[in-house]
Length: 299
Image 1: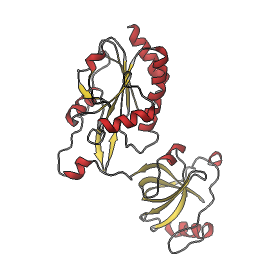
Image 2: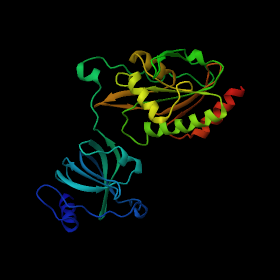
Image 3: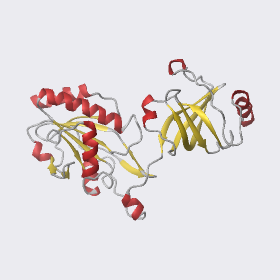
Image 4: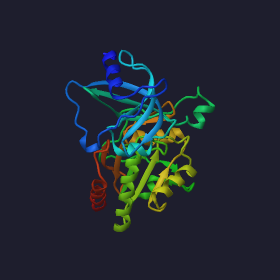
């Protein structure tokens, strides 16, 4: 199998001792779905060049056992276009290599170019604080009160928001997946604009990386999103306290090689402090949360 793929590369790409020349990839609209005969392989390497216009990335990749040797070459990328905004030369990445006849491409890209948190670097043997699974509050039940620190350094309690519906989500500022935290932040920014116009509601965004996401880091992140502290707060705090809050919403997260693997959650807490609705994954839009906030407001 490996020899057939090498012959294909010789036909398509003039090889050199260090790298392979680029292959012109078809425009995104011309990319066809893989056939049933397509083969898929785990893929790891270091980004050497990013070409968003051609939707290609040049990677110095590791050997793919039983398929091809380690080398540096260019690969078309069939992923969300936003992935090119987070790929940079020098980033380590993991992906899936798809080979379908004479076509090949990368998908499901995860970058690995981020440094471990300072606490992890200083004390690699320290105990990791993560939420316990299956501890989430049921819809209709009261969310336990909590006290965390917002981007201005002020202590914020959930109980202080009684009388207003609150939308809650979780993310972390260094998240490298364009379709995860950055997308969540973009959706909440749109919801923030809606609430500003409607003149009601509050937003809470809670970090799952409290050791890195200090109030200063969150303040910069909030400024980038145009968040107003009076309506949209970004919260951090002691890792144990953050984990307790996450558990209340059924959130699970854990560190992995300098990143944080986590579930994606968006919830609405009613004016009485009860869980009104909750969504998992990205199967929600700002309009959904606005509808739920309005419904919770009316009781």
